Image (cartoon, rainbow, N blue to C red; front, side, top):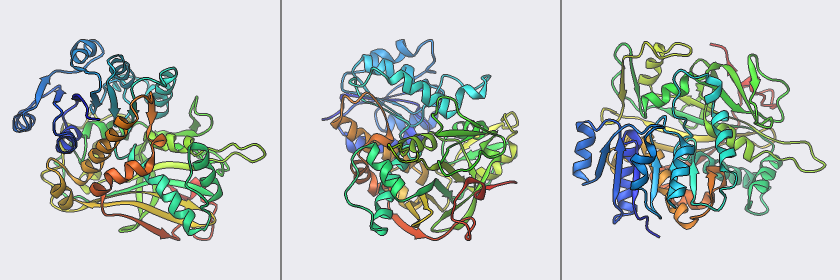
Length: 449
């Protein structure tokens, strides 16, 4: 099946990065891009690839008139822009029998709102409520980039590899309940999405925010409360933590922004390192997906969160953030063509109290990323390849309604994106933040800085 058209909302970092992959995967499919600013850099790419383009800000008041007539049955709407509402665009796409994909669940605005209304849990809960009754409509895959998104695929593969090492794998799990039972059998207590980005570019000027993907998008994540999935083995809530409403106990948040919250993590290249606990959708969706409540057994769920060590330039940029505002930031810089060297080491770290730990993920460097596709860094290629892989899956599963990455066939997505994520590798480790204590409670990981 070939899509009739691809409409990309947001032609920034990821919109540009996915373009060469889309043209390779769907060479005969016309592509239309919509962006609020078509500067010379964007126009140069648009002319080079002979794309149709619209310069306009997609808003709550104009999205139907602006996008509706450009949506075709059997086409795709890729929502890759910040602050463009996921629920509204899904409803519009499904009304036109158009497939939908975004890389994060978005509201219309973050500014001037109560932050509690735009936590990842709040946004996800509203979307899942919206999704009820749409199960047989055109497939709309939400929050599917690298993370959130492809990391849910990595979690399943890591579970299989840990189970084989522990000699506990009788059969490949089929469906959510069996995956949760496997995680319980392995006593996986902690799942970190562990990322150490060592890509290097010029350090930021005063009050400049530099980042390897949308600076504005990452700033928003930095200012939100630190959110995480909450494990059944945890004895108590951390200081200043609160349970997320409507999360069924699977999600909590800390009453402080992610960029001020530090945790310990581990990766194969760097060993133990300090990272920031940044709010992400997958922290909640993975924890919920792997929650198991079998009759006669105590409830099980792992503690899940995103532990991020950004580039040196981004880390220095973060000094200009206040707790809940970015008023001191005067300019933004997307790090891409100016990256000199380095890699984005992105994987999942699964830690069991009985079977040790496994890190499974990508060690993609900038030179290999550029050799695979233009307009990319290692960071953007991980996202773009995950999007393209999922589009193939959607075309084979055209009427699944609104779904999350955790529900996808992990082997299909992994096979489709593996080349772009390579080298993908598994590393078993006995690292723990407190070697004499294998309880793996969150208090052992969180740092006060």
